[in-house]
Image 1 (cartoon, protein in one colour):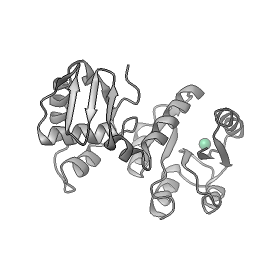
Image 2 (cartoon, rainbow, N blue to C red):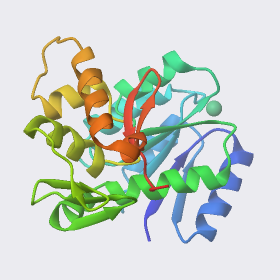
Image 3 (cartoon, rainbow, N blue to C red):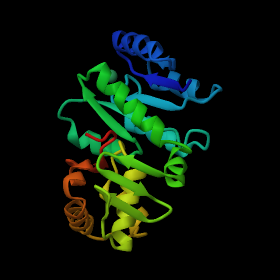
Length: 231
Ligand code: CA
């Protein structure tokens, strides 16, 4: 079962998370501050996912997240950041530092478990899994190798660019993609380009997807996310 490292200084919350995640079958490890987290990260096996509190007594969560991204063994390990309500500026900082998703405190354990499941399903080789076969998702049938998306059994006419945008969001569903990341991965642009380009294309893609257009969620201040479960 996946190993989850919990980096959080509120001991009660750590106990609660460990209890609930273990009940779900996950293995857990806990660190109450940044230094213990760094020590835990050098132990093997490496965690499959890291839950990271934004404010630790000795280190900012974003700083630790940057460290995780710069270390070869943890570079691709998903990070789920815990933030306090209304700290949007810090959420953006954390996102730029490389967090994969956020949960705002106070959160329900159920919501956290859903996010964890979505992140783990999307991480590692999961992207390839989706690409290898056609997937039914609500009213959509997505055939990545065949470059087709069907809505209620009718093909959606997408341009090559729109398909790439759809595919990028879809295979990473449940994870927020910033406009900068989309420009890099869909448009191959890393220079300073107006991120409004992304918004324009998302709008058109949503229209073409009809009643499945709502699966592309706007995450205010961060970017876009394809919903993790069809409704
Ligand atoms: Ca804290």
